[in-house]
Image 1 (tube, helix red, strand yellow):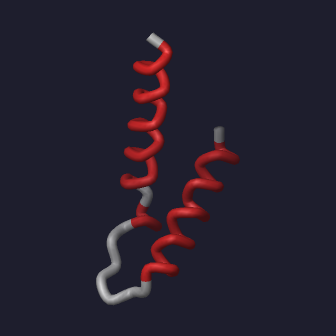
Image 2 (spheres, helix red, strand yellow):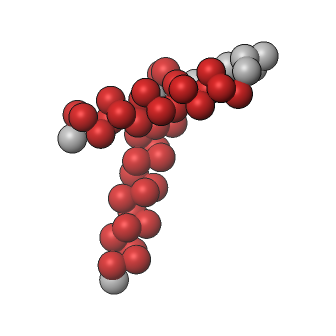
Length: 49
């Protein structure tokens, strides 16, 4: 049962990041820019909860 709860939490977090406008795919940008954007969006999501 614990695995299902954790999986649900991970799926909801990924969906929240994907729905964030900051993490929209930007073609032609270096990978480190996308990595930094995802990191900042994850921190903002973490601080909001």
